[in-house]
Image (cartoon, rainbow, N blue to C red; front, side, top):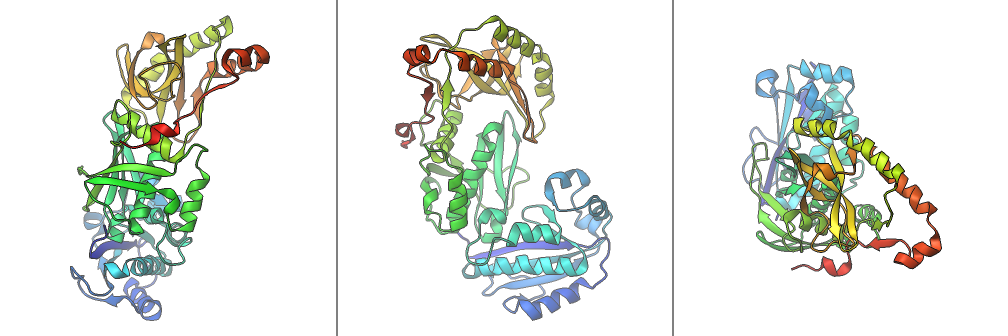
Length: 445
């Protein structure tokens, strides 16, 4: 998948001016440490060797504006408040353009990372990565890009970023920065906030196997086996997070991605879950990540609704107007709301959580967060519709990781503990688990 040649750009923002001449620093560093990089005036299209060009941009405000203070909340790394404000006033930047053939991709990229760090350190500037649209202090740059990269093929996600944003009712996750390795960027469409970290993990692992040379056909089927990743640190770290029922293998179908405004000027591959079973794209995506990485089994509790539980539910329902209004206005990135609703089953009702994706009048649509035990024709991840009047409880998840709600869950846990263990074991064989997923459900179509 790697292009024949690579071309990209870094820069050093000067705060607001440099005590040292960046061009002199640039040339001195190359002469001393980077003889493999050839300085040229202009970068050629198909270089036969590793090239670098350095030049000033003295009209930063109009031609090379840095990210604003709001953007730096997500795109800034290691900056102090003073540096953030100084960046807004900068008047100069030293731009470095790199190009190299495919055969030199990893040594040339590492040298580029080292060189721009050196220029930033000697001038007191900040590193700008044009491909990932991020700003770093030299220390933050080294920690992110170089600390874990002694040589060879790196942990690719240390050189890239996954952007995640709301796209209609669902979210879109897409890489930036793969162009630095001459590789396509990767996108997953139609995911949910509750799945965003698992989808991002899948994207990063796919980028890793692509960087390590796996042959791929686009469009076409692809098998991604996490256990065959050659980078020991990446493979070991990812497998630590596996649940016991993980297969470690993703059966993917790849498409040519459809670009949107703001995407990189690069090739784009879309990962889809078409080869998994399920009634819709969301159930298939849930099956894909749950099969690959495993999932914590859903514990089914059989209980009767007593007065204490119903009172807690009544109080939770008083929060629904507030939650509805917050959803209508638009939740901040990374935040989502789960609601507990009943679904008819052979035993009466099975109460499960949905992640809200739509809330209009009294109808709520969302993605089912549990694997049903007693409800036929429903699967985790499936898009379902429930009535507002039937909601039993809520959980609001915030971007910083804390959550609010689920008062009924605490009561149910206590009720479960107080049950007679003998009767409970006779009724349903102990704690009933819906293994999510079972191995048979992980076979591709």
